[in-house]
Length: 572
Image (cartoon, rainbow, N blue to C red; front, side, top):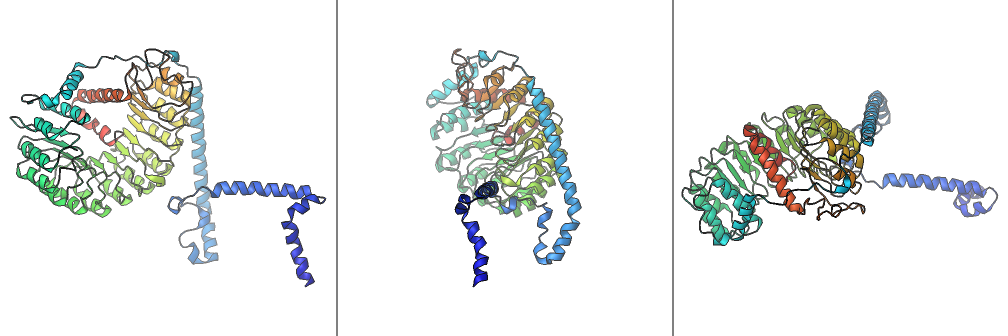
């Protein structure tokens, strides 16, 4: 019993640190205890950050391969020894990339440190003309008294479309008002009703029966789920023929199934654009027959069509060789196999993958290898933690023609990788959205100010709090074509960067929380960050969209190409 008692004495002594502290030499025990507490805090901070197994790095040589547990200790050790050289090379490559990124960030900070405002920031926002255009005033009057309008006979279709958008914005598109936009002789060639929430099944069927005809070229119905079902779609197909219909957009058609839509598509052999966002009843069976019905299809939008599976997409996409724009937002089954199939499309230029959490760096690498040189627009908003700097590096190496890139809330993207992507294009980036990406910093600002100074039109860096104020000031001073800047949550920005530039056409959106930033524009007529010249934020958005539309209309034949950016880019 004596040896056992002596064996337990050290444990008892170690457990009783309080008694040892009172004895001679207790200071050593206290320091030892403090050191162990520091180690525990450091390790707790490490283990408190949860990392899913799918998001863990797969290039760690110390873990072995998937067979490490079954090969035995000797074979596993040999495998680790053989992979040691490759692991060392990978570590050196990563270290060189980090050093290069650090140098680029230091250069950007040094360049921004010398920046000085070219305009007195105390003047506040640039003044803007408070007088609205005459056309907008006329639209407002017609919208206010639309119930008193008897007919739109002789009004051009382009003006009808603008008036319908204004009426829908005021939620006045009732069944009675909708008859103004469906009647007339001859029948309209364009019908666009962005808000059809007040149209029931009877009103929708009557509307489609009147507009469906040989002259109809464009049919756009938003929020049409209440009235648009299989019966209404069949009625539109029966009222045809629809041989000239090129654009069909049915937003929110939650009652539309494969049968009704198939009957309608079979009557539209010339269809080029098909948009069916938020149509949950559509399945993969319809997608497999889509190439037979619409052989000329160039734009396809299946956002939030959760009934469409990955297998159907993989089988149908290769049979649509003319597809230029594809949106698969919020479809859970979209994964790397779908991206590999999309990479085989010879004409694809725009791809939307918002909220596709199954997409990984491997899929982006395959996409870049297949369509890198021709890809112009890519949306990766909220794709989860599987999209990292490795995927962005693959895009930077191949996608040299990107004009629109959106990666909102992709939290694993870093400043260096994004900066390399911007520099790889050689100044082609026009719209960039990085809201909620914590890694955005001086590197991105420096790349935009140097490589994209002549092309950047829209920028969203909301909640990017590592972006220095001077770097933003340098960016705004150099990017003279910038028309829209979104900086929600960027409390580090000051009046020096936001007001100290000469770009009078820039519209800034975002509420700032700095107490020293005067939101009233220094007491000059109530001019604020949101609306320069006393206008509200919504008014500024409308003017920015009108300016962009005017620019695209003035580009002539190229307008059709550049117009895809707003559809597949930031205006989600």
